[in-house]
Image 1 (cartoon, rainbow, N blue to C red):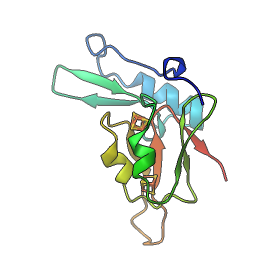
Image 2: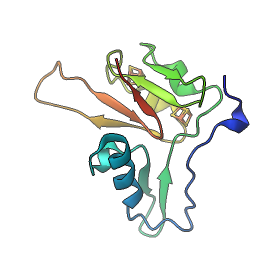
Image 3: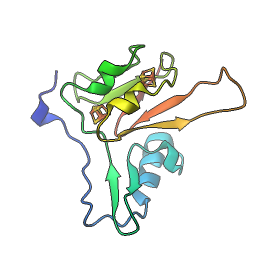
Image 4: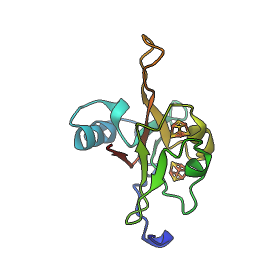
Length: 131
Ligand code: SF4
Ligand code: SF4
């Protein structure tokens, strides 16, 4: 397991962030080949009209998001500490979202047209674990 001081994550300086969201567009293109902020691993939060903050996963050593998942859908990469989502196991209950103090997990997309549609999650700075 990767040590805590070896876990790297992106950190944004709120004094410099203007909330332009370019980081979200570039991230979604890099990870998903789409210019779609909803698919970005970094998330810009507007605290108020003057203060913006870009949020990413801190890669906690003992991640509460993983412990909170009732379906074992979240795992930690042994090499990097990245949180990974198994889309087949995730049912979109949102316990992991509640458990993360940093607000690093968000819902990626949701179809309201069919009750059986999957609700998927996007862990900031993480990778989606392919089945
Ligand atoms: S998603 Fe949140 S709780 Fe989970 S490792 Fe990242 S920062 Fe920690
Ligand atoms: S939303 Fe998915 S990953 Fe999060 S706690 Fe529920 S089943 Fe687990």
